[in-house]
Structures are given as C-alpha cells and as structure tokens.
Length: 492
Image (cartoon, rainbow, N blue to C red; front, side, top):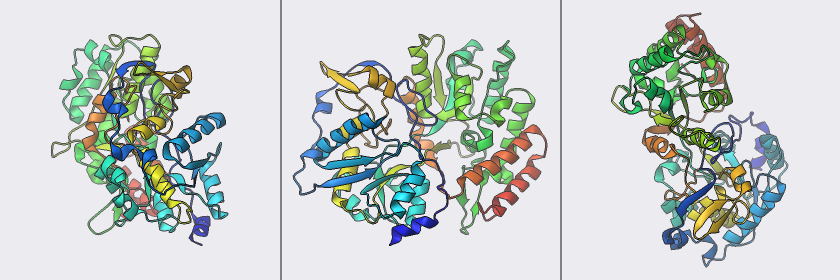
C-alpha cells in the first residue's frame, strides 16, 4: 500500500502552524482580524448567499461520515472542537469526525497513516504536500475540482496554480495565505518630518529614513530597523533591489540555486552591513525570533520603527494598541511594499499554502470534496475565522458581536483570511490590514523544498558573518553557495 511508504519520509520541511491570530490574540507567524464588537451591519447580500454557496442545501446524494485529521483549524480545546464539529456537520449535512492531536501533529499523523488508518481529509502545509505527492500518498482530485462550480468559482485561479503539481491537484484550501510587507511606525516617522508614502523605494531611501530616526532618538536601546537574519525570514523586500527572489529557484538548465547567495546579492548584504556599522540595524537581529521583533515593534516598547512582517501583523499591532488604550495619534503601524526592483516593480514573500489533502485511501471522497467546497464559501469562511455562532459571536440587530470567548479566540479558527475570494468579513479586519493586503499583487510563494531548514540556517549563518564584517560579501557568498551545495539544498 502506498501509504506505508510514508515510513521513509524525512522530517517534514515546515512545522504545521496557523496564520497569526486576528483580533487581539497573539501567536507567532501569520493572520489577523479585528477585535471587539463592530458597527458593521450584516447586509442582505451577506445574509442571502448565492446558490453555489449553499453547500448544505444542495440536493445530491453525498452524505455519510467524513474523518478529518486537523491541526490549527477548529476549536481551541476539546469542548470547543465538539462545537466546531457539530457546526460543520450541520452546515454540510455530513457526519464529521475530527481528530486534533494535542501535540506533535506531524509525528501523530505519520504514525496514523503508516498504521493504515483511513482519513478523508488531512491538514498539511505545502512542504508536506510535496513530500506526500512524491510518495503517491495523496489522491488526485483534479477532475473533481474542475467539476465543482464552487471550487473553481469561489477560489482565485492563482491559488489553484500555486498547488498544482505536474498539472494535478491533490488538496483544497484551509485558508488564504497573506504576505510579508514593510511595517512602519507612522508616528515616529512623522516626528522626524517623514510622510511614509513619500519614502524613496530604494535601499538608500530607507537608509536615509533610518538615519533620521536614529539621530532623533535619545533612547540608547532604540534601533530603527530589525530583521530575523538568522532565519533569512524577512529579507525579500530588500533583496528586491537586485530583483532576487527568496528561497530556492530553478534555472533554465533545471539546476537549483539560491539567489540570495549569488554575487548579485552582494550590494544588499553590504547595505545590511552599513546599517549595522552605523547602529541603524538592531544587533539583536542576529538572534531575535519573530516574537522578539514584534515585542519591540509594539506600542508598549517601540524599540524598533521598521520591520518586515505578515500583512496581518500590521493590523494586530494597531488592535493591541487600541485594546491597551493607545490611540492612533500616539501609535499607528502602516505598511509599504519595500524597495523597487530594477524593472520598477516590487517583490514580496507570500506564505506557503495551508491545505486539506485527500489521502489515497480516503473512504468518502465525495464527502471530503463537499467539506472543501464549504470552506470556500462565505458561511464556511465565517466558521473558520469568526467561529461558532452563539459561542464566539452573536448576531444582534444584524450586527456581529464577539463574545468574551470570541475576542480571546481572535477571529481565527484556522483561517483569519478565508480562501473564498469574495469573502466579506462580518466583524472587519484590524486597522491597517486592508492597506497591507493591497500589496498582494507583488507577492509570490517560494519553491517548496524538503530541506528548507538547511537553506535558512546556511544563508543566515554566512549573512550574519558578512554583516558583522567577519568576511567580505563576495567571500561569504561563495562560502554560502559551497555549503548549500554540500548540504544538498542546491546544485550550484
């Protein structure tokens, strides 16, 4: 049986993790929504969904039980998962059975599949998706997707293109992935006479901004700019100056290489070194993780003024500030798409897809497709984001109002940004999110690879040495390429 081949898989390339919370909740890496109650009225248009969205009301023979292995998505604890399961069952007309391991999701999923257990949907990320396809462990659902008016009509074609492998599709979506943007403290910029919309989108333009911010500060612990350099996590908006894409890229000869490790990247690495030498780059950038960077960027600290983070975190910073009584005239985070490329565009990094795949031994494929269809509707998006009516929110006089539990759950039950392309958030996104999301046209995913961890560690290690001046840019990049090849990440 093909599933037994999973025994041979290497450790998955990426941890299964969700988008950042929305509203005022806090997690590590992606997504956000708004907080508290809303004055936004649920319109008749939202109340009356188009026929293709009424998954539960379709007259077809699909039924039975759908077994789902979940991570991130669903209830926050066992009791709420039961409520989520019941809500999904009622909406789809199916009997939904959900398993959500308390920890070690990857290991548990592997053990279950290798032991022959059968699921109709399994939650995976893009790295897992590629590995499982290679092991022939997933079912080709291309024809079913194309035959579904909901899946083809409610999801952008670009999203399907991102998960199409050799012309085939093996999964549907848990959520829409967002991208990382340049986040800026608007008030700090205004205090030194800078309108963020007039910043010259070049490396020197941002250097001049950082210099003014540093000169105006009397705080010895303040650094204008922070980055997660050790993980090569947030460098794309700056590498765009040379037109270089993050991650591994395949050239015209079919060989893998890392643009950030090419000699063409030297001017950007040297720009980072200049920032470090002039104390414009936070030296903690060599060790900081995203949680550290966000804490310094937050209203309570403001030790940094410019970072690169998920579009959702722009709004989350603002929502957290408002929740703490800090008004926009004192603290507001705004966003820009970074530095222009040589051809006058921008380059941003989009998160890899978060998926529900159909295993090769699924017993209720029709039911699985129906669940995927539901997730791609307005109603499904509301369940995956705002949560369960009567538990996470109530509807009062046509308005969605978050309960205390709903506020704590931060409008994130797996999809802060639902995959439905025309989704209308009934609570509303946090301040600043709409602007940040508007830069999505410049975003693209990195090529999924099985050794992403090695790529990040190697580029980060040599990048730090270049920035500290311990090795020249060209020599450091040569060493970087050499190690990438020796570790099997690249071919050249």
